[in-house]
Amino acid sequence: MTSELDILDDHFHDHCGVFGVFGHPEASKVAYLGIYALQHRGQESAGIITSDGSELHAHKAMGQVAEIFQPAVLASLPGSSAIGHTRYSTAGDKALMNAQPFVIDCNKGKIAVAHNGNLTNAGDWRRKLEHKGSIFQTNSDTEVIVHLLAKSQARNLSGALGDAFNQVEGAYSLVILTADELFAARDPRGFRPLVLGKLPGVNGSDAWVVASETCAFDLLNARYVREIEPGEMVRISRSGVESIHFAPPKPRQQCIFEHVYFSRPDSVIFGRSVNDSREMLGRLLAREHPVAADIIVPVPDSGVPAAVGFAMEAGIPFRMGLIRNHYIGRTFIEPSQAIRDFGVKLKLNPVRELMAGKRVVLVDDSIVRGTTSRKIVRMVREAGAREVHVRISCPPTISPCYYGVDTPTREELIASSHSPEEICKFLGADSLGYVSMSALKQAVADTAGDFCSSCYTGVYPTDLVQLEVRETSSNGKEGAPAPEKAPVTVIRES
Ligand code: 5GP
Ligand code: MG
Image 1 (cartoon, rainbow, N blue to C red):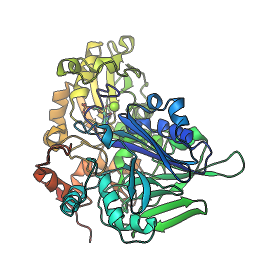
Image 2: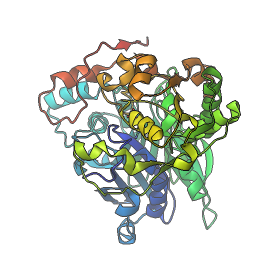
Image 3: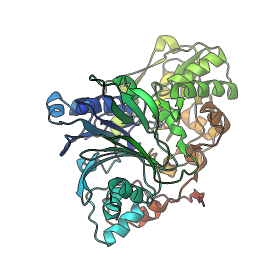
Image 4: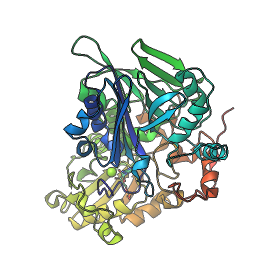
């Protein structure tokens, strides 16, 4: 079952949003609002776990946050602390069993875990642990952390978590709930965002909140306090907030794609406004690939801020020449290819009066397979545009992400095997321009080399052990993306 027919989204997987709250009388409602604001990070399943001080209460389901969490459901989730998760899972992997947060009962007590990111050595660990008798209940890499945690000899949970974290590789921004604690942890490279905030309480006692993005705080009127640092685990309990550095920080590898596409423009990610980054991308794109044109048209919604920046820089009018239908909902479940072929019209429609006879610059954030962009170019031509110039506010996407943005395989990424000229021809556009890598770094204000840009470079900051395992895995239920065959460049950190 798909929760939404999203033509632009149906080949991307494993996006997630996480949220946590501690010390609020209506924790389930706060968590509900938190993951509601993070819905864009994953639309396929959602879950909330609360703690009433001794027991954990859970509700998870396929679908979107507002549908799942009806008042009666929220009322069945008592307690003053909670974590929530919203997820977009892999195609073969949509089962509710993989919906998060997970709740486990182990020698360390009852623990709930919600994870954003992907571990790059999970397959390796899974094989080893299963060999030693661990029984996995899900296909998720998150479960590896749980088993490592249970195996730890550490006396308390913080120590056991630290032990587990120090054995896994890759991307994890986690929220973890026990009967009386909330943990928030981020991997030592800080791939995915995670922020800490404070929610003023009615009786003067503040609640703590943790979220993937600050837009969740804005909805709640919570105050942004700071980022959870890479390599840091924050433990929140009745005795306050404790910061534990479980690993020395490694060179930062903040996901640059969060600024390009993934996060909401009203969020502050890695200490920088996403909207600022996107408008700057548009400005730099206009400087790098200027074109004589009549109107600048964004591909909504993701292309809008960059198109605004492009229009301001170029001094060409910004016009909403494409209208997006936000209410596609569940009209079609698992559409056949025949339906997909006209699919883009379900989501985007041209405003003919704006485009007819015009030289149009179409601004979008990225091209992945190119199939949607091709349909949009055709649609704009059919609406009467005289010329269609495509401008993309990131460099060519040449390599898959293994850190929580599940792009398709390398073979399916059009820019992995085609030059911009060839892609331009495929799209049927009059010209095509991608923003350069140096402009992208400038736009996110990356002076220190703090970002991971492996989707644009093919250079990965961790070993990718999982890849070998996926290829050799024979249980057939991994739900993993197709095995990666192209050679992968790996930088080993000493
Ligand atoms: P394509 O032309 O490659 O088929 O599709 C390009 C569109 O996909 C762009 O509008 C871009 O915003 C969107 N896109 C790029 N990356 C992602 C992603 O990770 N998830 C989703 N849902 N859409 C994406
Ligand atoms: Mg888009």
